[in-house]
Image 1 (cartoon, rainbow, N blue to C red):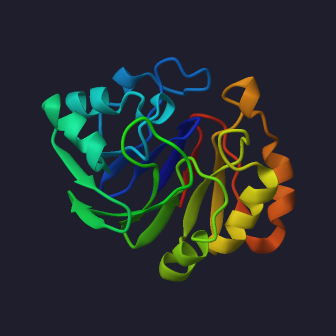
Image 2 (image 1 turned 60 degrees about the vertical axis):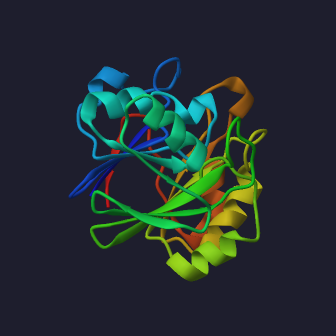
Image 3 (image 1 turned 90 degrees about the horizontal axis):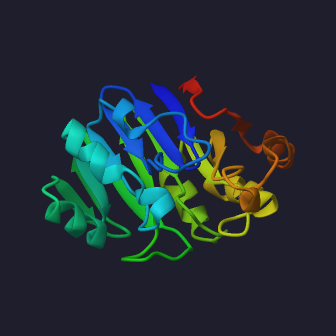
Length: 217
């Protein structure tokens, strides 16, 4: 399974299916691809209705025929644009084109609907994308229920967790591997991933990627 950081919170997961998460590419200083370069996708997941997460999701769905997965309000807007969409809510699970998506809580805000995180099950792996969130004790439940093989955790502070609370989240989630996201896109979310790695210590393997870089899980 190939894991590519697209920049900011954007992720591409390529296994038996191709899953795109939070593809903020247009206008993103750290984006490693343009929307036109995303020519293959089965499922596009949006964690919440903010422009730096919804991003180019609808455009990518239209050009690839992917199914859009998100909170109910995102799915309604996607369907209004002729996109095949699967709406859901926190606590729910769906199967979208053979990809199992569990929607979990995130502590944040959103222009429509609620913010969320997701746990994706595909090819025998469980992958957690926290979306934008502060540290919450509910992360212990995510760890207890899912024990993710890999997690994407925001570290940029101000609008999400900073490094100290992100390191605690790694402990709560019981993840085996973690990739830091949502940092250094703009000066106000500057963070040092090496400092995060030191804080995590031996609780998990920290994988630091550059935008566009791929990790094989």
